[in-house]
Image (cartoon, rainbow over all chains, first blue to last red; front, side, top):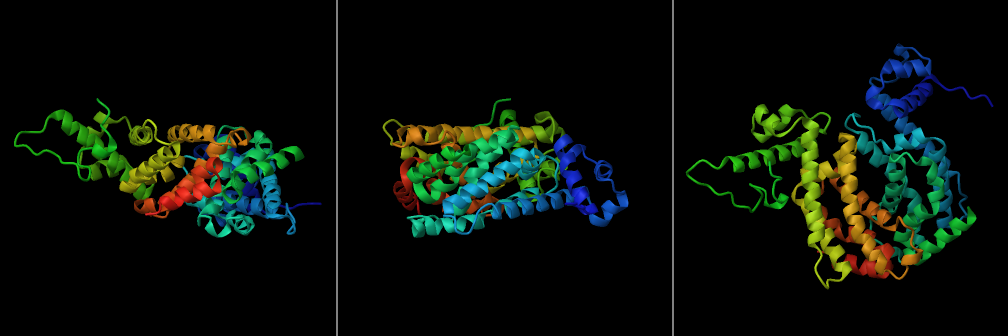
Length: 203
Length: 228
């Protein structure tokens, strides 16, 4: 299948690569347009600044991540299975494309204001996957209101540590542990350990 | 120059009396309060416009000191930021270790440490912004300092884990995930401008920290006890 990338897409891809390779501060618009094989004027048709291009790349990346995860499981799967399959897909994506993972962490000194909020907004996009957890949990009604954010935050912390340390290739092997972090606020430790064991035996 | 005293006892802190005398204040004291004012000014400037857009002019204007004074005390903006972050880290450690006492059940130590940390940040929203929002994009070294702070709490929760009946089965990252959950909630509140009301999320923070080690029933119970 022939995939034709638009010029905009080529710019976004080039930006992600350039940032991963040399750090945001060292990336110039000239670098990005050269790597994308487009002219400077095309860049300015699409974006008004380097930051804007970076943020657009970021948003596109998050969107794609979410789309792929949504197709990783079937609607009939029990909720913990959905979480496991979605997580497996996410970790696989990060392991095969480390610059994606680094971008996701948006650990980028020098980026303008708004980077942090973008990151928080991206994390919040994963929350809907967890709403079902409340119905599935034996303690459904009693769970704290922010249990979804708690679960995602726990996984985020573990994933982030590995990404920052440059160990993205380890991520798929950490699936059982990260799954535990996602499930324990909803299911408690015994059940979360059980799910973790099942995930371990299936890899 | 001596490291400044505890964050809460800093000169000019709310509730802390500053002696007024007819004579000139001793130079050590003046220097100390200037340093403190600069660090607070940095935090407030960063809270307002972000670290990247904060200039030394912003800082010295806000602190009411001269540029010369700034440069006597700090090498540059980053140096100043790191000093503020270190100050905070020191107090985090003080609060956490201060929560220990002999024969105190570990779950109460965790509760008291969590309460102390929440209060630390609720009292100074600009520093909460620094700790939870700015640290990621300010400077790479800031992230390292943040991770040091996390390790302080990690060691506390790992002790709780050693007591847990399910200890052997829990993943090695259980405490890191528990803290991550609390961090996400704190970060959201601070980024939304609700740092001064952080106490309201203490029950949720406790639940996140305790559930892997004590189970849902006990974690819910402890969270309910923490409701004000």
